[in-house]
Length: 109
Image 1 (cartoon, rainbow, N blue to C red):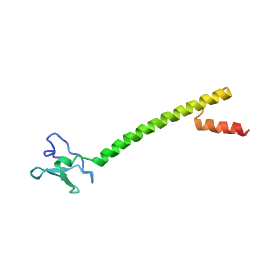
Image 2 (cartoon, one colour; image 1 turned 45 degrees about the vertical axis):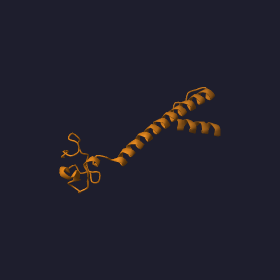
Image 3 (cartoon, rainbow, N blue to C red; image 1 turned 90 degrees about the horizontal axis):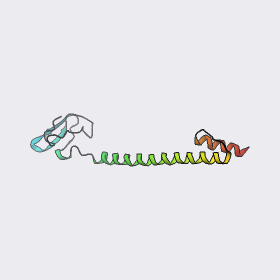
Image 4 (cartoon, rainbow, N blue to C red; image 1 turned 180 degrees about the horizontal axis):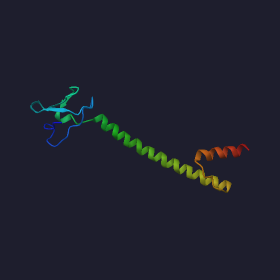
């Protein structure tokens, strides 16, 4: 890849359309283009990926949210175990779904 026009030390990202890695720079007219699919952009904007950047940020937000849900689920499971042990006087060592099923079966008996 020739990165001559994109700020001498900046490495050009692959083509956003086809993923091609042979990106050419026409220094005289301030243009980068993909040698594979001929997509083109001015030098300053070639490495910008606003949609990808937004998706990455959303991915970080969703992963943080998922971590919180998992923490709350673990807290709920722990709380259910303690409640079961308190009510029944003994520990129940399976997962919370098994514990709920066990409790339902006990109530049906």
